[in-house]
Image 1 (tube, rainbow, N blue to C red):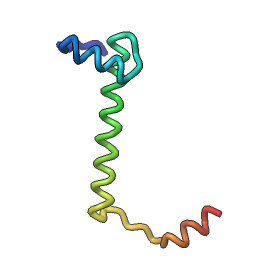
Image 2: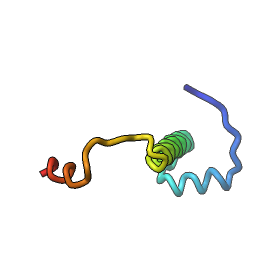
Image 3: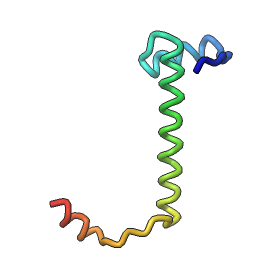
Amino acid sequence: MRITVDLEENILDELSKVTGENKKSPAVAKAVTEYLKRQKAREFARLLMEGSFDYPLTNEEIEKAQG
């Protein structure tokens, strides 16, 4: 999907350096994808800290099952 986004030139330059992408579109796409991954990881961590997941096995049982 194509969209138009207004970014300051210095932000776009920094984005290109951080992502390692020389072209604008791939740099922005990579940054957005990475941002979404991090947000999902934060949400997962929050759910873990709240105890939203209940695992029936102990750590020792998990380690034994992994070999």
